[in-house]
Length: 157
Image (cartoon, rainbow, N blue to C red):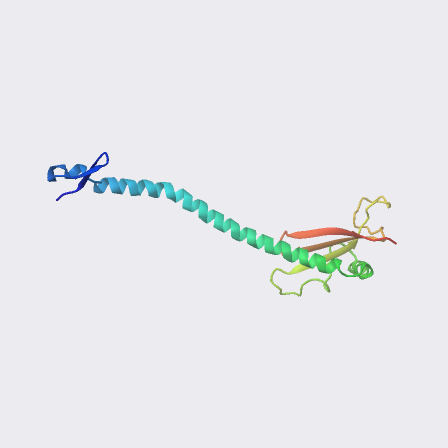
């Protein structure tokens, strides 16, 4: 059996006596494959972690955009209507059912409204004591999660 032997740029056929030096032994190939596998395993773990992270990021981004969309929907309403709903709610912890998603909706968005005490004129140090006529607090959150957005809405008299 002959094999090619490289000498510089010239190829020559190996004799049967040189067959051991004319290629890779099975053990050498197995060691090379083992080393490649050892090196690639952490890389595949990193890739799987990155894929899981991208899925989580996709869910969080989707939830954020849903929250912002509901907030914009509320803020697009006339200020007197928002003020009336805040007065009807009565407190910052009461859900405004008329503007929240219906019960049973997956990742239900809940709307909260309240008057806001920005200047603490009454001295009670409570932001939601409602002494400001034209300052309203609006919050939208996803039910059973910590994801939420909140803002203050103000208008002239």
